[in-house]
Length: 537
Image (tube, rainbow, N blue to C red):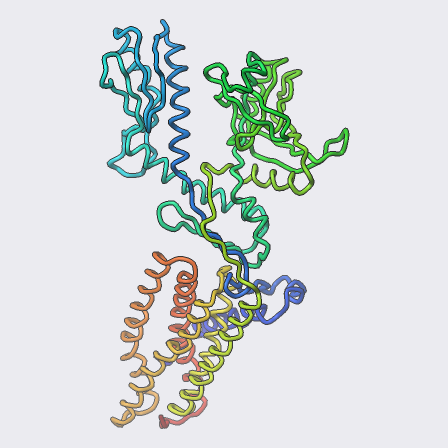
């Protein structure tokens, strides 16, 4: 078992070389890393929020607003469906009540026809749950009174919209943070409706808060040309229309409630300048489907006003002078360069499906992070020195060889963390310190077994070979159980707990390698060169 073939020796040495080269950039400045040759690794371990400082935000997602929006849209859908029926289905008292829409038929004989038409408004659940296959988000039935029909959201439909709202919000937030160019943000779901956002290296949280809290829900509506100023001021507009404020504060305008096109079809948005007057504007571009719809709308509504709405405020409502077939346009809104760029970031990242509120906000200063790094480095150095001295005093030369392997172990951990782009947190440093102690456990098991065999009169070479053979199963069992614990911590933990689990798991693999393979290789070389069949442990 002490004999190494050439290919095994080569692979072992190459892995050690990877550890040296991969960990080396961590001891250089950013400028020095950029000057490294292209063939050398140049990535360093990314420090987490608790080590380099940054912003910590706990967000609450208003998932109920998504459900309320579905009910509001349902009210408009029911009105449109009944009016477009042939012949038209007459009704009265159409209103939203809780999670349902109710109305009363003028002619009870239309009941069956109305129910059939309204059931077509139902949407299938997107749940992966096998029990949910074939279920719909709406239930259409008769009410308590004669001729009354109730279109209600099902419990499954309500729950799915809540879950979907939080999941979509998390992805939109992730896209927005990535668009800002920040490094290694941590964005994780917490509970049913909360999201934790940690952005290392950012001290001014104002811009992050502004970008995160802006819904950026963009839509395009036809302007209601029949509404008079008196109707708009009083809020009494035609059914299917709604009054919205102008973003520049110049007044209000009546627009059709149903959006002709939404920001979901946007594929690009950029802050730029108007070629005529040099003012900052935001240019946007639709995908092929959006461009087709946009072209159709502008073709059919020439000489009508078209409102661009962002977060329930009308940014502009230009007149459609001619069809726009290119699938692109420009938003004018009295922007500054910064606000134009911020809006472009929001539009590119997508709209939040629901409003979010900041429940908790913390800033971690870089000084605190520097203290944590210094304390972690001190703990690692003291722990490592203690282990190194103990191994030499206890096992002599073979203990010294185990110490050399331990140094390679630390280098491999840093190299793997750097290569994988993992974020090192304070608990992660604790995981590395713990790994230092765990790294020699396997060596202790082997050396104690070797010492026992030598005491029984066995020759050195055979004793060492027997020690590794007999201790291997114990070493694997101990490390596998620890690895299972690390996997569970990573799966169910969050933030710093995951950081600890990652460093612990990496440390387990590198420790087994350095103890079972690298230390054994060093001892094999030492025994062969020594040419003696007796050793002292």
